[in-house]
Image (tube, rainbow, N blue to C red; front, side):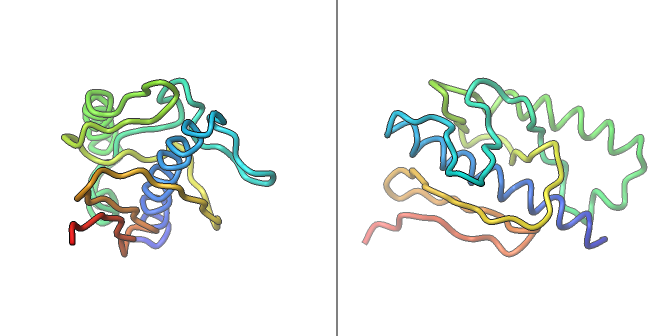
Length: 140
């Protein structure tokens, strides 16, 4: 597995989850998709443009031929569209499919996250493929 591949996948996952969280928080404040000065919104608040389904792990992707990767990407994109939706300007996941990632690669980044999670929820953000930043609400 190359460092570039791992970096690409991890960045996509991190950005995905950050954007989802930012948009939920912004919707509550009536400021959908308005990042602070100097930051870029990765989600347009309208549709899934700029996003794709995640194909396996970085190690798995690195072993695929271009043809295998293209076929796997089409399948992942089709599945992604079944489970990820935009509802009232917010990116929503039904919890039944796989992860979403950005179509564009990103390098170094600062990530701002506001997260909305249900009671007893369990979620997270993968940064550069691993480790996961765990976000959960364990009932005490």
